[in-house]
Figure (cartoon, rainbow, N blue to C red):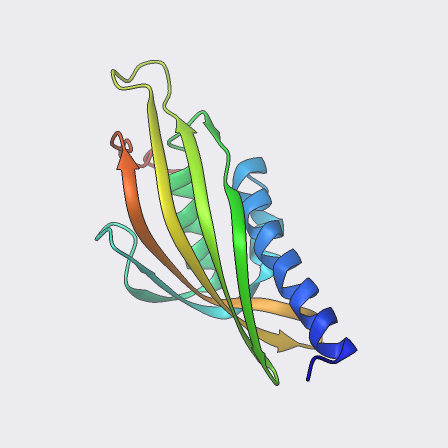
Length: 150
């Protein structure tokens, strides 16, 4: 049976995941940190991304180095599937993410088509991301290496 609390939780989980994508694209590192639990399990098909259990500050640093290697990123999310179990939640969504590579590069863009699976936990401050798995389905182009010191 769907309750009002379930609907509110699903809305809040969706908002947290969308805010994650917005923090990446706006390069708002404090907003990104505020969305994360103190520890985050990060996994991906790419060796450069994980798997790893990171302190939130390490996660922000790692993501920042990857995102700032591009001049523009746009993370579009769709097809949200959310499961809430008490104070834990999982949000699976489709990701379409074009990335513009700086002009000094030869290939110009990298586009990721993937499935995001965010694990979240409820805190007094709201839902916080405690895990992220990125499962790439299609990759168009190759991402540049992260910028040193980013």
